[in-house]
Picture 1: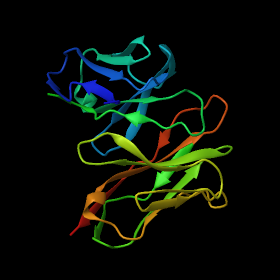
Picture 2 (picture 1 turned 60 degrees about the vertical axis):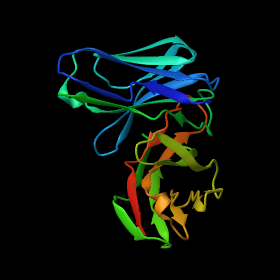
Picture 3 (picture 1 turned 90 degrees about the horizontal axis):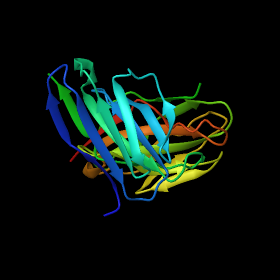
Picture 4 (picture 1 turned 180 degrees about the vertical axis):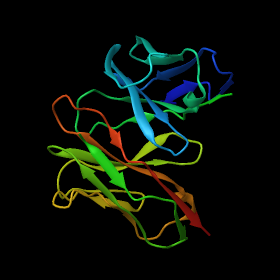
Length: 115
Length: 114
């Protein structure tokens, strides 16, 4: 199936730990994104990569570090996890960076719970 | 900067009722406008879009018209079904230049009861 897939789907961990979420897309898209969705469903962009190059880096603590080994993968590593990091993290991809009709394809989300 | 304001939820309707979810935007220039839908436990998926003024996007019985004069993109459906229960997000992306971020509204939870 062509899709954006992210793992793990659920992640429960203790404060202070380091964790990673992986994302892969097989759509041949150039651009990938990480979004954070809080408990009120508000979506906020965190990062965007275009052909492995960091393009968008919103005001996100530097405990969050994205890595794109190739244009089909965008991983998110989080150091020293805090309670406020609990959220659903969505990976997404789009065919290219600049387009007025740019449509994003989202993964199913990774629910992170920090205890 | 660009922003999207959509009506606060939750919205609860009976099956076959008429649905309107209001969305207005603030943007410099002429953005493209989108409605995304998030079904329970899933990621967002595109519902419909419009890229220029007076365009009407439609899909699955949902419609929205890009109104430049009122900077609005209200979502409508004539007869909702239980399966339409989801969170609906209005969004915009600026056409052209380097401002390519998709900006979302806060989402509106719709619950349709049988």
